[in-house]
Length: 344
Picture 1: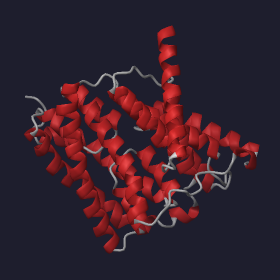
Picture 2: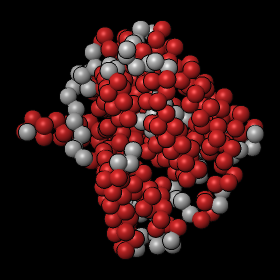
Picture 3: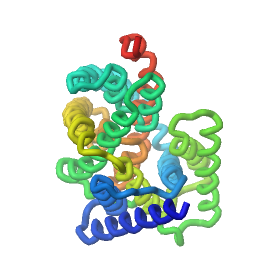
Picture 4: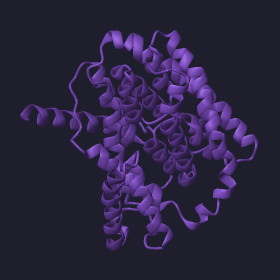
């Protein structure tokens, strides 16, 4: 236990130094990218890292409440306009799989690992499904961690250079400006939504459970703002640690074979995301920045955070990512059997 405490303390110090350096260098979202980069570099250098138990999950509950609070009657009124763009998601996932599975097979991965490595779902979900199917758990973990880390890194730079956004949007008001009753209600929505989601077996319970409860409070006119900016900054910090720490224990062999394969796949994903974004934008299905963030195949929490920072429609973006996750999580095991991706 003392060793674990020491490792947690060292991890916190490294992440804090990364955040401070990112602030000094004026990097977008410094409290996300600073800790992520510092922990990633430290992990690749062989240092042992460890996040405080349960804290990354709590960080996701904060973002869940922030997204839910962004769902207002005005956002719901836009859902009929989203029908076509949401309907494009199954096609998007199918194209990713059609290209990704043969790619990973060609790179030397077995059928099950190749299948779940190519599916653009949540890291934990794809690793769990792959493990149950007999895939290479370590390979799946590193490939999906690489996808999330690289997408989260490049999306802000693409957004600022191509879509004329500054990532300086208001992510939340200071705590001192929010009514104490609303703060308590948001805290309750985070905790009860998370635990209730787990009890119901909701995938992504730590994000989606709080989002659903906060959306109900927002639509009912009970809360009128997102969680305080201090809480959202803390969420960025610990999510950044979680992404970087995924590479703890990676070997040179894994870097050459697995992480490099993940990087190749990210290039494929970037091209496909650009194509679908452009087609959807030309078809008038939404604002360019909304469509870009909706098709960027990163994690739900990270994309929600970027949507808020970019001043995009967070509800629009999250609904598209939620649709993608539902398609992948419900469809991946079924399609794996239909295509005989499972071991005989």
